[in-house]
Image (tube, one colour):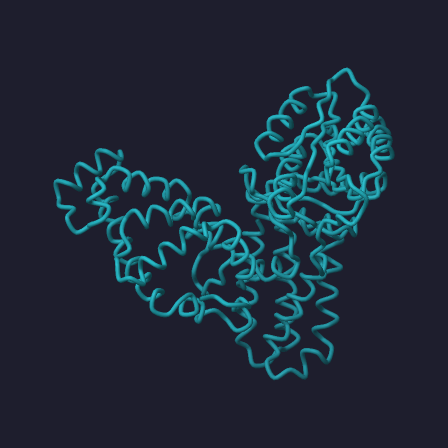
Amino acid sequence: MFDNLSERLTQTVRNLSGRGRLSEDNIKDTLRQVRLALLEADVALPVVKDFVERIKKRAIGEEVGKSLTPGQALVKIIHAELVALLGEVTVPIDLRAQPPVVIFLAGLQGAGKTTTAAKLARRLIERDKKRVMLVSVDVYRPAAILQLQTLATEVGALHCSSTADEDPVAIVDRALDESRRAHADVLIVDTAGRLHVDNEMMAEVQRVHAHAKAHETFFVIDSMAGQDAVNAAKAFDLSLPLTGIILTKADGDARGGVALSVREVTGKPIRFLGVGEKIDALEVFHPDRMASRILGMGDVLSLVEEIETKVDREAGEKLAKKLKKGRGFDLSDLRDQLQQMIGMGGMGAMLEKLPLPGGINAAALKDKTDEGQLRRQIAIINSMTPGERKFPKIISGSRKRRIAIGSGLQIQDVNRLLKQHVQMEKMMKKMSKGGMKKMLRGLPPGMMPRGPMG
């Protein structure tokens, strides 16, 4: 998400940060570049005008003029205004209410409400240790009811059944009763959507919402829906007491204009980002971290948090002990690392959160490190014998041919993997001597994660 905007703004920021002083022409050209970047990202025109005007007011004031490094000062202003545009602070789900706490999902058809309901349930079950019940009041699409039931089983949530011939209000009343009897902490209500906003739809969603007595009301919106999504958000905001926005399909949207526009026009915080089809592909939205990512500064904190939750700690400790005893990093260990990378969304998802030096094209890097490439590397390792995995040096030319045929790939692919293994083995030796600090020492000041890193 924001790839195109990030590319344009990163270049603008790079041109600025080295300047010893700023002239009126410098500032005017920078603001023009910022304005074009936002318009190309499909940000609503009124939002662009306000945003650029706010930067301009601060830029021509004393804030930049008195700075020893005016270029950096202007970059700092752009970052601060981006944070303000994205919502200033991270807003967690408020669970401080009498159980069951009702989370109400509303939005247009196709926005991804049903999948989002399951993703939210999984997050609450695994991270907050809550007992969650799911219910669908989408009586117009029996398939949606069935889909939610299947997803509830997958994520380990309770499910309140419903049918297409029931009244949505009656379903909600029954779900509230069932969730109390089941001692559920949270009830997530998945509502019906339409292809467009209409009076009948709004009247129904308001009626169901009133009966649900929702504690959190989220508007679920497709990131790729463009300005139509912004208009829908306005309509829902007028009809329901929205407490936040969830943006879905963010991984498929390179522009990001909807995120910036919806936040500004509704005044409601973006709470989560759906970043893939997998059931764990839901990220908390941090405005300050997202602003840093847009400006090419990376988001190491989110990366560290993701590693802590998704990496198999036990397997990591086992590998660390093995390396400390002087035993090498073999190809079975490399396969484990590749599998963990896939679990984190692939190398591309990690690269998005790393601050990359100027001149490195993040999009091109992501293309080279897709999930398919990782799976092909795993297939090569799986085609080896246990002995070959443990002692890669025994892999001769004839063995390489056999491994290539077994994995359905070329000998060059096998050679590349073996070379990659040698490089990773060297890196692992360094880590075993100096810990993670050696790897993180090269990060920019202020990006070093707090707490013991080993």
